[in-house]
Image 1 (cartoon, rainbow, N blue to C red):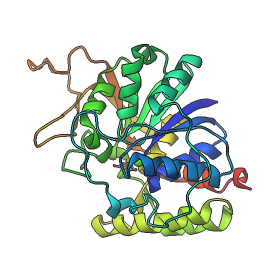
Image 2 (image 1 turned 30 degrees about the horizontal axis):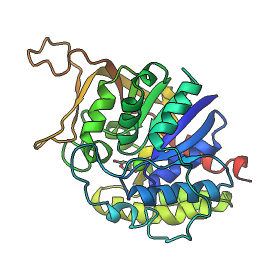
Image 3 (image 1 turned 90 degrees about the horizontal axis):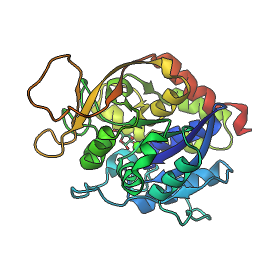
Length: 317
Ligand code: RIB
Ligand code: CA
């Protein structure tokens, strides 16, 4: 069983990841921690509570950081996820409240209570993980792994030619996460740009999942419309669910490893730069950092099957 905390900025593809984590038999979802990113942290927290209520669960939601660590807050990408984060479905407000502990404190408390067992799965900007390290640096030795949807090593960026949204939203926090002595797996655009979910899949999910399927299909229409308008695909990318998939079926992915720095200013701001060539460079920003993993290949068919199976399983009956 994989104990996970999902750090998220829901977000339409975040919802896919959250529902998959809820339904997958090999995942024990301990809680959701929220961050700004696709929407404000207030909206992200409301959305996380809404998803938990929609699924009929009672798991903690802890509100997290509302701004980047150092840089200014970017405008929220309402053209990707809608102003409400769910494709402008404008659902009723949730009835429940977040817990009083902050996201960072929840992460620290859970990791200290379950040493060596928790995978931190981060699918938004990384401020909560950086804040957790600030509160208690010892958690880096007690976390099983950090699996993050973010960054890009060699493929095309999505916010700039070299930068991915989650990393660019808070590059200083991301660099802190990459430099910490814990095992990080980057599930970046190198693989998520290879996995496309189409309308037919969401129509099947709507038909076979009476609890959350219609919501997922309705919200995804907005997301697919955006991606189909800017990329030559008939669907949307499975960004966040790819990180959840790595936790339960890591062999879906092929990985490389190397020390990682994140550019925090200038034209390449937000770039995740992995030292992956065995060359003794004189410029030594990377030396002294741990080698981290990055996913570079993916079995797209298996990943889509994992998502489809999770979204149409008896769990939702
Ligand atoms: O670049 C894609 C990532 O940014 C995904 O996590 C999406 O939800 C947004 O947060
Ligand atoms: Ca996200």
